[in-house]
Length: 125
Image (tube, rainbow, N blue to C red):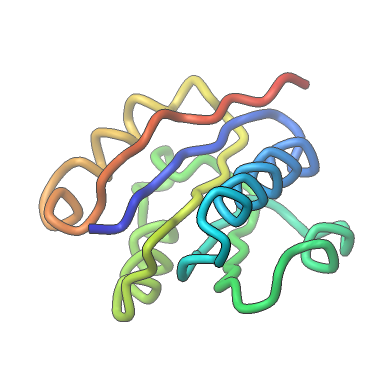
């Protein structure tokens, strides 16, 4: 099962900094980086990718609430990533009020047998 963490906060740069810190903590604790994928909502500022360790599978999705658009974009991106399941997955979303709906979506079939949700990372503005 892929350990999956939802990361929420209004600013993409803040969410990405939290993901960076979590990946660095994983790397320090384990001595090597597990296969890791990221689904990031929003456009890149160009800084995030340059500071990350090589080998991450990074997918970006245009800004917009995943659950309000029927989860289609998230479902397609997630299905592509899960063809070769990573050990870790971080999903960055801007609107924390929708975390319960997205968690429910990720906890339902078929994802319930593929993903293990970990505690969410919330980011201050």
